[in-house]
Length: 360
Image (tube, rainbow, N blue to C red; front, side):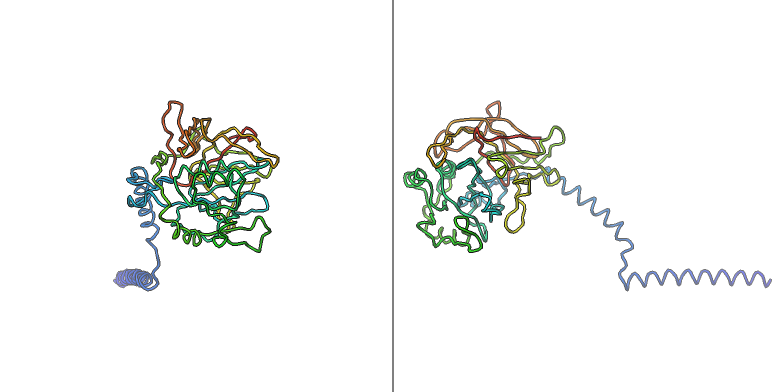
């Protein structure tokens, strides 16, 4: 009898201990907010969110696009925005550049000795603290500039032909040699690689020229296809203007589905350290010739030629066509259809017969 009573007491003691243990755990969780179930709920939530995001990415399409670069916008007013184009140099002593990473569309083309120079286009409304170094104009950049109708054009002088063409075409020229108050000279660098401007200054220009700036040009064709390449992809594009310092390399990053720029085998970053990337790379093949003792070039911008377009890891071979100085350069596939570009940052690499393009 005593043995049975002892067993019953033991059961009560064990039961009471279990209750005390559970109560202690519950109190600890409530007081100290211990996330004992968080991993379970988080993994479930993350999985659901991931599916939702993927479905959204596949099904969402742009109703309205900005004409300049194809990005989605909310209103028709945002489709056509006033633009500014800035000549930015690429001399080794001018690196790293400022503001190039913020440009929506960039043209890179050869100048004297076949080293390259940039013409970068920005929506005037964008905020960019420092852009440059700003350098001089060349005639062929003006042919591309006029495709955007009447943007502001910021530069420091230019070749004789370029300055004549600016007047003849009534381009909205903001020349540092005549309107120096819209630029500044950075004492941290040596001339002529030390001229800069900013969005604050070009917005001040726009206040004076707003009635003259027009932008009703027809944009390129864009699509919503974000599918990344998985087979026979082009992982790297090397564009040599003048080796070794003027070789541009674009490396495809399948995770971001973007192209990351290198220059001189180093990743090309802005002065503030941000990496320059692009969504679409256009390699436009042209013919050129030297026209004076300084080595300035004349480039055939009007007519047609071969083009390669790179987006999402794919390569599309086609033909570029431009019918007049102010006419739009368009890109056509082998069947004569317009090639769709990926919306976002667009770089046009203009390569003459002295240049070299390789891929891997």
